[in-house]
Length: 286
View 1 (cartoon, rainbow, N blue to C red):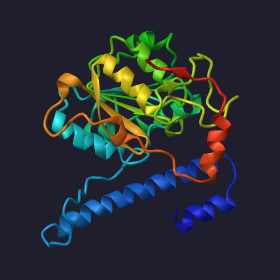
View 2: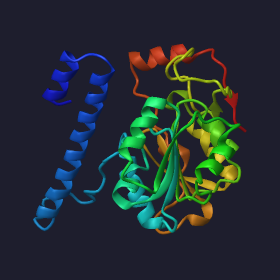
View 3: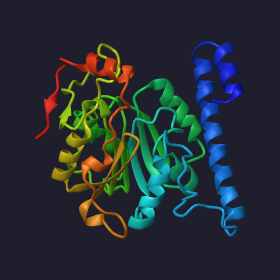
View 4: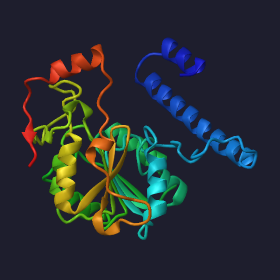
């Protein structure tokens, strides 16, 4: 965090200060990414870069480096439709489809449950007529209607979901939805067992349960993906990438979950979280 960000955090208070801090952190990350690309172009013939260095392995809009991973993935797979559906986008500027929409002109739908975030996302995409932002709390029961209402492409190139709750159950409900690439955020604290939280259409993250009681394990998503005709091809932080089997090509290959799963860092914090999660209800995924 920069000195300016620290100063603002210490001197400002309230939701506006937090929002400003998020924007500053995002802007700093984007500036570093641009600097990295410019330096690479300037010195690419000088022999300074290490073997295997990828200047494009940077994040412009995603939380970690998911958007860079996506660009490399679509470079191999192709993107014939250039469409997306993303569920859980907050203000739309830190999500997996943002770079594709803002930098490449993709068409798609963004669904966000929080009214304030949805309003901010609509404002952020006002200049993007091909992007529809809709406020909706997504459940198993309303997914089909929402896809019809928003005109989401059922053969989209990208589907991303991150709602910190019923994520596994919502994907499971999208039976006739066949995107080429799927991104999910798995819960690393659930370990290597195939489990998810029980379905509750009224579930609100952190409302009545511990912060990390949400979502599903990587193994649970992998089993659902396999049933739907997808294979695991990689991961970035706690995000897993799945590709429809018939879309595999180029250097993209299936990888075992053991190569993708990243366990939490050992320590007192992890011990506290695991203690809080112990004894809660889980559903085994077959």
